[in-house]
Image (cartoon, rainbow, N blue to C red; front, side):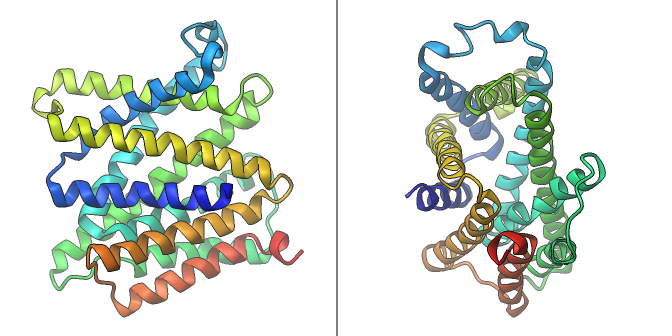
Length: 288
């Protein structure tokens, strides 16, 4: 149930961005409202251990975790922008294939030694992003869409890399939900400052409604992911493989059926290769 909940809630984020594009909801102010909602929901989830009531502000891990908020809001904005420009299916592939970035970080900084299958899967993931570029005859649009997908790929990967680094550095000092709530608060604060200096981005009624919906689903997807990691303890690589494939396929199917999103023949190949790439990167767990 946790795995199914994680797949559906993560795919729902892509679908909500697609709805934003259809109904003219401005992405950036909605994302700021989303992170403020996540911060509120996160503190409610923590209850008496919320970050307002505790002394987390004085901890050594607090400044770098807050700083992660800048990466979070940038990556999330790129996902929203990419969904409108390149489609939900292509953006979900770019976001989920970004696992190659934290994998590379683990190899270089944490001295992990991946196998041949993992390395091949990492290379294949970058091919998948290229194949999922927007279906259009306009060369300029296609090129722009590809660049956005690459930025989604890098941005999502940097977020995972930052969280991976914080987990290794401060994992014994603070729990995942507190870290997430602090990051959400940092992202919301960064967004508020940008809104104050650029008032044309101030949220309207649509942005408030869309942002609150996005924030609740965003936090629930985090709860589902942590729940699934706990349920699949010792098999987390398998979980991430199945989860990532599931998110890509669910968001693609919904986009095709509900939003009539078209995918090129190369795009279909990209979808199949995406599933194969995730499988290769977790070969040692699935078939070990």
